[in-house]
Amino acid sequence: MPLNDEHTTDFMKSVLGEEQVSPDKLKPLRVIKQLASIAQDPRNIGKFIIRKTTKDVMHKEGSLHVLGVYRFLNEHYGREWWDWEPETIWASLEKDHRAEGTPDEIKNMVMALQTILNTFAPFEHWHIFEKVSHAFNQNHVDFGTLQPTELDEVAFTLFILNQIRPNTEYDSEVLQYIAACANMSGMVFLPEDMFPGVQKHLDDMTFEHHLRDDTKKVWEGGALPPEDQILLRHQVEIQIARLKDIQEYLNSEIK
Image (cartoon, rainbow, N blue to C red; front, side):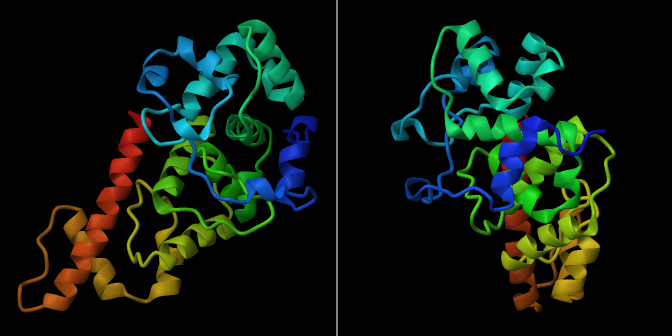
């Protein structure tokens, strides 16, 4: 499998800091998943990909699913687009769908898709995984700075990567990065089905094994700690609430 196809050049150079980011792009954005009708009718995806967006519609309502974009491109261009230069993709979409302008967020999503289709970089390097995650979640991708990823978005990214490249193993540095993001957010337990292979790295950072075990038990259907252990009970409730938020986000994105 090629590791440095031409189409990945822009994305990889940006990740590696070889490309400057203009000041007007430095403000983080969690961009559009625009209108629910876009996700519900796949015929709209092509028009959306090449439609200019404004800040007035940059909110998380509906969902432009990254797998929807992936399937749309495969349906219309087969596997050929996997190896196309970015400009070829935008030009083909504009020509075939009679529209102009591709939002940067969608460009990043498509280029991130190409990166995982043709390289193992997101599975091997934490900084590539981070930028791919932001691209898949339609956040602003700031290639010049560290952007710790939210755990709900990490869970979604892991889901997408498994759908496209099932059973591909992650290098320990990627798992350690995810564990560090979890540690920063105060989490001590991550379910294996959402965060495969991460818990052992998180254990090395938190050492909160009692809280971890009680949280795991409750998450799997057990009872909360007794009332006389008020502090532990409260801590477990916080952990469970955060895990439910992650699960809710993941369910909303993959439905």
